[in-house]
Image (cartoon, rainbow, N blue to C red):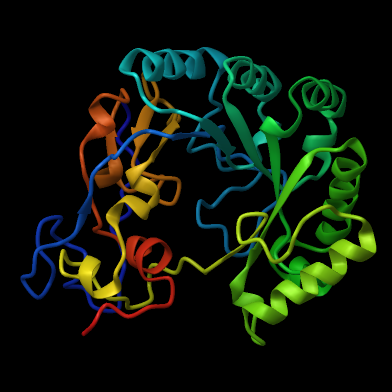
Length: 319
């Protein structure tokens, strides 16, 4: 297997996020055990039809560091999950742009025919529309068990296009409108980086847009409209210790790595690998093995993203 890209976490304090067991202050680092595999994420490949200004996975029309996942790859993991008795309920597809992978419609059908739910993260542009016929058939057959989460960084075109390029907003809105007309279950993902007036104002702006365009998304629902914080590994953030759970009144079971894993296929590798989560596709310490069984061990929260994105959510881990 080709070694994964080495990407040691950066921090304004270089002593942080070095040791998976203890923090820079010598305190016991928090870890999260797998309470049960309920969501399996599939990275369909890092290739994308656009290049965003701040893509955490560096997807682009030329980045194929993560190669295309295949239907055969997916079937093997779904079969393993069933054999292990995993409480799997959902399979999510991310990228890159998942619809650049020609196996995606077949992978969706495989997931849905097994009685699972499927979630696709997409920019809803031309690659998605190239599969319009197949998607319409899947929606008609499986209904609400297929959800499309569309990336719309802001409700105003100018701000969205700053991130994704001129004209991106218009193309995404065309895709959103098509999904709405076809009766798909739609979620939207935005970015809090643009929310200078606060989250409430952001949600109000999206609500007005959805109402004006006939997009059936409840902007007040934090699942239907997810507003994500920025993931800047160069920002100095606190390390998460075992004491933080009590201080923050937060359960480790609420974190993504307590109930999910992501499978990828690295370019040049002999086979797929299982990672701790979707946010850390290149860091080798979060590659847990080739099988779901191997990947069932606890995950040390040894990266700034673990703190900023998953644990703190704007809180401070201090007494």
